[in-house]
Image (cartoon, rainbow, N blue to C red):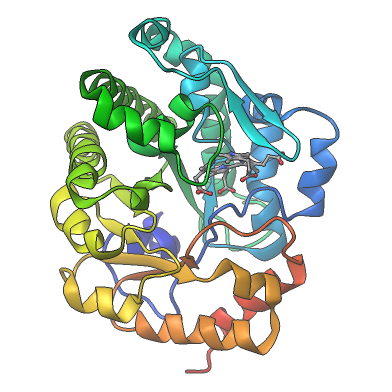
Length: 354
Ligand code: CP3
């Protein structure tokens, strides 16, 4: 089965040309077929209704034939499953009942997670049966699509749980880490354990590799980065690998800058997802040659499209030549990206030229 899965082969350390590809945030936002479903149900309903979540996960694969399908869900499903209030407000993003004290933290119910996330596991079981099934999904060869699970990494999820919304600086949460270290450590420990359980359940339900999104890791200075990004990630990777030998873990410490090499070395992730600001060739020269790299085209270039996008994409493809590389963006596809640009990007990358 693995033979046809080009993405899984590269995640397992093989160098393939041209590199397999998928795009962060490919399921949703920028596709008209996703926006049509949005009229029918709110975001959490879409995440928690297997029929809908399966459909949304497969929409980009049907249209473009990416090598990987990423589960349609959200990093904030975990706090929601522990009973934190969560709403996605049009134009504002997520709004949560902020956690600011010991009492707030004590109100969370980690014992409820397994039951609350059961529909997500049903979604994964159906997705795996579909991508590996005989008629596949009306695109690509049957059994050629790799199914990816994911979670937010503890620090990034803590950012939203404490701040109660998105933010440019996440000053409240970063101040809490300095002012109330015992409380903040308790939150990070809770998230380390529950994220491990969430990803473990996803792997059992059929996810073939999992990704940890640490979108706000780059806000931290090195000492805090080691404590709240590297240490919890190392713990999660270690437990997952003990329970699921051979499982591949992708780490994405966004805006990690100079800390990326240390993160790669210390956490045990198999794949380093690079953000837009990283120089793929330079990182490749610094890290273990067996480490798989993923990334890192500027999502704005895909919004812009045309010759500049094609040139940048081919340069990144070239920088990854000869080593295991999964082509992706440096952050998620932007909502107003014309779908034709994504089609052009994929055609360019799969072209035999070069
Ligand atoms: O990659 C995929 O397409 C799979 C699904 C996925 C979503 N969110 C669906 C979603 C994934 C992997 C995520 C990850 C996620 N969610 C991150 C980490 C990656 C990143 O972009 O940095 C973060 C920080 C979140 C939290 C979140 N969810 C925010 C801030 C928002 C509102 C703004 C936005 O990005 O749209 C969401 C909502 C959300 N999650 C939508 C989708 C498709 C849009 C909801 C809608 O408009 O209906």
